[in-house]
Length: 592
Image 1: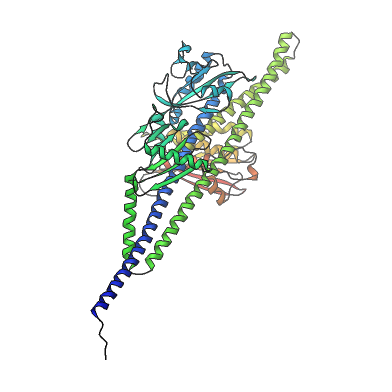
Image 2 (image 1 turned 90 degrees about the vertical axis):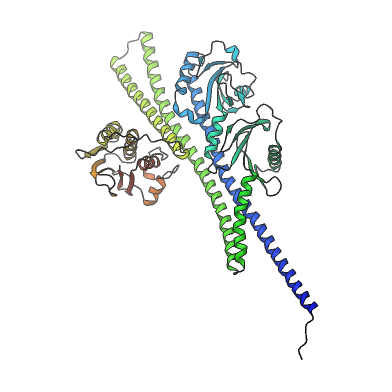
């Protein structure tokens, strides 16, 4: 006999099933909501961490580059620090340097030991320096207390530039420690804000730079750049005050940065970090609209995943797997950023060594010349009978040493130009001036060989050229950069070849492989030097990398040339190939 189920019991079972299903749905929805928030946080934090690394490096590079230039200016001023005319000539020479525009300088001036501007790069010698006293600027007294450091001050409205700027200066003292004055520069706030914002690759990211007394110095977004709240240090909005409170709390706990994100009321996300070695706090942030947009995009993704769960466990496993990959990507990006910083530190140390070699060489030659001339002057003034032939021989030696000094300065200038070129290739500011006129590669190669002949003869190295007659003259090349490529490759061949060897240079017309152009020019640079392995070739083509080679230990070089050469060739539509064999030599093929 079949037992009938009461209708009330059926309704109860249906209710239980409904409640159970609802609970499961709520649990699933809760899990996915938590997962969603975690994904949003990981993505935003990853984006801001990457942009923070770029911004911090860009800002530090500007400050470090500025400091090195000011040190060089002070060194030249120290030769005659009391001559305004001498100082004016130095500042004018640097003012006319186009490369300084990339540093966002608005002015640079000399203030004497009375804290008065006496010479300005733009206006020259100031007739009434008492009207341009900078004694009250907070960074000026520091240049006297610690003259060998770069001191940055509170933003001001410039006396001569008439613009808002971030001032800074480096003091100069004589051998006895007496304060002589200081070079002061000003970073134009609007220009430096714009240049820093150009570093950011994500257009939705905004930035603020806070300085001393928690003053907002710079801000930037896709619409505007410049100064914010300079007139009133205490008039912060709630958001800025909150960010500064968070970073101060974080620093108290021993952390130099803090990340925060809020999804609910007043949604926002920011990453704040104290810049190493400088009294600044850099803040990168997303506004509420951007955060909500990112959340909306990820919600759509998660809803689709929820709808797909009913088709099996595979989708859930796939989601977990994707999250793990995203986490791994964040760690990988962090590792890459750390490796980049390590490479930069190593490169900086090698650069210092390179500069020291140039300076010691110049200083040594100059000391010998000074000693010889001093002895000769003493003989002449004392009226003693001096051996004319011996004196003439000493003067000839001094003349050769002076040529070595000049050669070293040219090499130092070339090294500095390579550093500038390498920096511009990274920042995207490097320009190729392509000319519609034909480029005479035949003449360029002859000029380049002529320039390198003297260096080659010192090592008994013979340079042989074989250039095809009626060599094709390509259009739309930067002739100066083509010559830079040739000189760089010939110089490398000379540096890395043993004595009494031969360097061969061939140039001929070839058919264009793609059939786009009627003809192209192939240039071969072949030496019989130390050579490289395949792995060493890859290292040599990387920025800031040096090939460790026991045979080339006699050469002081940090390997800037090949990455720049490759960039210059490919930027002009050319191609570069390197073939090398250890202890046999290297062949480099360039096609324009």
